[in-house]
Each structure stands twice: as C-alpha cells, then as structure tokens.
Length: 212
Image (cartoon, rainbow, N blue to C red):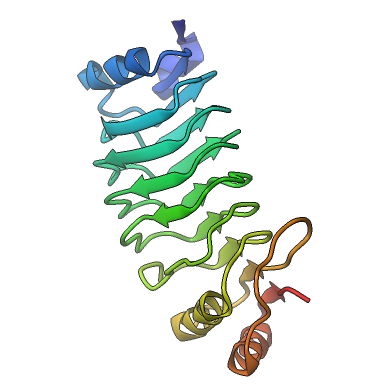
C-alpha cells in the first residue's frame, strides 16, 4: 500500500491512494488538514467491503475504484462537486449526505445496487446510475438535473412516471434521459401520462429513450 503524489499532483492538490486497506485510506483522509484546498481524492485497488463514516470535507471531487465495495455511507460531502465509484459490482448501498454542491454522480454498473439515497442535491446536473437493481428513485431534490442515464435498472412504472413528471416540472431545455433496457434491465414502460410527459420533454429539445 502506498500514497502516490507527483509534482503535478502537489501543484493541483490531487491526492492519489493505491491501497487495499480501507483503514489506511481512512487514516490518510482524516490526517490531512493541509489538504483543505485539495481538488480531488482518488483511491485505487480497494478490496475492503465498506467505505463508511468518513469526513470527505477536504475534497472537491472523489473517485474510488473497487471490485469488492458493498457499502458507501459518508458525511460532510458539501464541498464535493463530482463523485465517481468505479468497478463497484458488489455495491448494494449508496448513502451520500449533504451533497449540496455536487453536480455529477457516476456509479454505473453496480449490478447489486438496491439503495440510492442522497437526500437533497440541488446542484446535481448529471446522474449516471445504469445497470443496477434499483426499483425506485426520488429526483425531487435535483431541480437542475438535465443529463440522466438510468438504463438497465428495475424501475417501476410509478418511478418512471415520477422521473418524467419531475423533469417536466423542472422546466429545463435540451437535456438527455436514458431509461431503456439494453441488457438484463427491467425498467417499466411509462403510463399514458408518462408518455405525454416524454413528448413534452422532447418538444423542449430533450433526447429521451424509454423501455419498449
């Protein structure tokens, strides 16, 4: 396990950790008050199952690469503007509190993901959450959302209708929404009202794909 910081990393305040030990990663996070202006934290090769209860308030963006992670539940995320979890094939739970400044969340291909909860993310513009098992999602707290990819999930018809209705309510133009089933997904077909909302979005310049 080691911490890698190049000269460029120091200049741009980017902390990269390559470790399979979540305790080491947590200690590095907790013991870096000098990184209060850091732009990003990147953790690679993590093989622990949980990454929980960390104060990530030092960082503008957060990236974690792990094939074994099952739980992500962290606090003080208000500074983070971009959050990515990659290679998360076993992730079942995502809880991110106080994502008030986050504009992008990418946790695609978490094929075991059952729970997604960010409470309110008023700055969120892009949400990539495809190839998971989530059945419901509430986007009421994401009024700036205009780039959404939720293909190959298990979203119910009421959830699909909720997404379409809220995007109409948000009254944004020229967005993109992907709800199709390309592989093993079982996203439901929208109701008649959902189809009407889809048409409304398309008339505003949106590109919308739905299950067939």
